[in-house]
Image 1: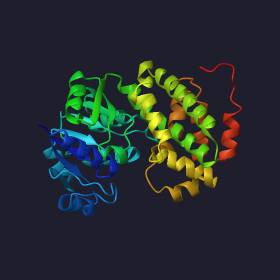
Image 2: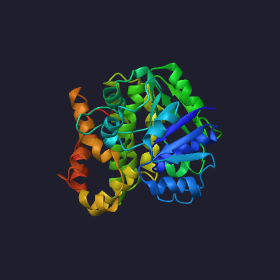
Image 3: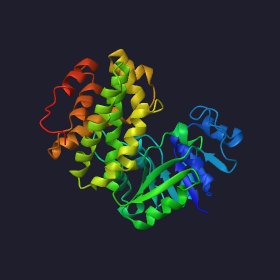
Image 4: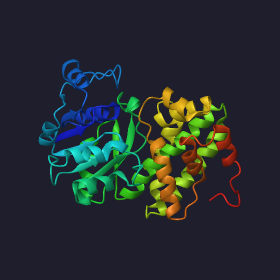
Amino acid sequence: MAQVSVLGAGAWGTTLAQVLCDAGHEVLVWGRNTDVVDEINSARTNQKFLPGIVLPNNLQATSDIGAAFHFGQSQVLAIPAQSLRENLRNWKDGFPKQRPIISTLKGIEAETMSRMTEVIREELDTDLADIGLITGPNLAGELSLREPAGAVAASESASVQMLMVDLFTTPYFRIYPSDDLVGCELAGAAKSVVALAVGMTIGMNLGENTQAMIITRGLSEVARFGQSYGANPLTFLGLAGMGDIVASCGSALSRNRQFGEAYGRTGSIEGARLEVAKTVEGVASAPAIRELAHRVGVEVPIIEVMADAVTGSITPHQAMQRLMSVSTLAEL
């Protein structure tokens, strides 16, 4: 049995806290919202983020970040990607040293084009061997119901890989270790942009043929992009790559797909923002991922189009016209 702190009491953080409890560990989840924290402790629910879910009796919550730092032998990060750096700067003085840090964030920092593990290293001066990543096709709405699912535990450290396998494995949640931290992280960020594009086609009332084209070509883009940064090509055929794209593009629970649908239906990014008032990592990450791809000379037409779309510079119909005008000299 381990003691684990989960930093973030939203849908994903609370779901992961439940998984950790189910795996037999002592868990303390931290959140800013004192109403949410009090509800978790008193009613065993988090109706704002996980309506209808009854949380384990041994799950505790706190709004005291110092208490969370003191409690956890490992710290699990489950906060929005774009706020990670600011939070870490605020927490730096009290953040535990030489303890495993497990990221569950999927995104590229918009201003610096940094991966989340790079932000962690920069702000906390942490050894990469102490950092891990949990990623894969994991929708909080389904995992919180304890429906069977799988994820990848990526780290350059074999001991951190196995720690994550031990922490998160339950009868309904299977964890596969990987040493391809870069590939898993880039796949998790880039798939969000592909899901935006698929959602856009659904919002435009386009059919399965269109969706299949976007998903397949999107996976190819993500793989080329990742390989250009030294990732293992096989990573993109597994849960972190294909698995995550299938879940994010195929499920109405996916925030990125929801946002894309609203954009395709309203024809307006601002209209989509009003309709989907949640954190949508693909919107923030798309321009940064495009820039990272251009730095290594990789063509990513879908990502490029959606990067323009999220800035409001093109309409959904213009986006589709651009996608259909891409050179077809070769598929791969």
